[in-house]
Amino acid sequence: MSNAAVYRLALFSSDDSKGLVSALTGMISIAVMGFGGSLIAAIGGGSRLEYFAIWAAFGGLMCLPMVYRLLQTTTSDVASPQ
Image (tube, rainbow, N blue to C red; front, side, top):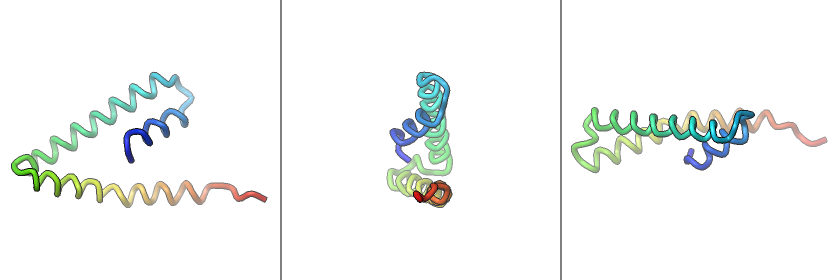
């Protein structure tokens, strides 16, 4: 998911103050990106740009089943109009 979609989802689904939710979402996003970049560099993605691109694409593809399951469960919970 893009950062804009994550922010909207977090802001509209929380009853806490919007500044708190935005700050927490930003900190989590930066931590995940930092950890992912460090992990890619540690496994050899920092030596060549092609390796970095391959590992980044692999990480993105690994997220697809989770996003698919998330979208599949949320659409089946929607009530049908009668």
